[in-house]
Each structure stands twice: as C-alpha cells, then as structure tokens.
Length: 77
Image (cartoon, rainbow, N blue to C red; front, side):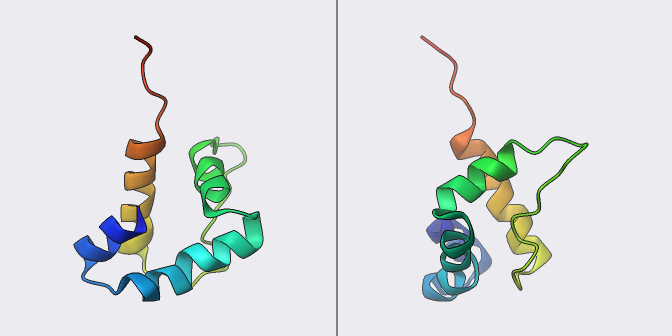
C-alpha cells in the first residue's frame, strides 16, 4: 500500500516507511492493525491513527483512500 502511495506522491518508499509504517508498527503492533482501526472508526469515537505522525494531509488522505479500497470487505460468491 505504501509503495503505491509513494509512487503517486513522488516520495521515497523508505521515507514513507520511516514516517508512517514504522511508527504505526511501534504504536499498534502492526501497521495493518492501525489501518483496520482507521476503517472501523465511527463518527462518535473517531481514532486518528496519524495523530502523532508528521505526515502531509494529502498523503494521509491517499493512504486512507487506498486502505479503504484494499481492505474493504469483499462480497461473497
């Protein structure tokens, strides 16, 4: 996911990992868990997984949009 975001934003993947995924691993145990938490947000109790990270708003928005698309429940067969 971050490789795609890095390509679209013209960023180095290692820089994006250093600013996003590695801190999420440290805080949530796994970046995937942080992304699932971001998807499960409800309007009454939203969780900002990027709260302590220095990430541009456009990068946050692109990450969340890509995560929503990739981790959305798939319809059954």
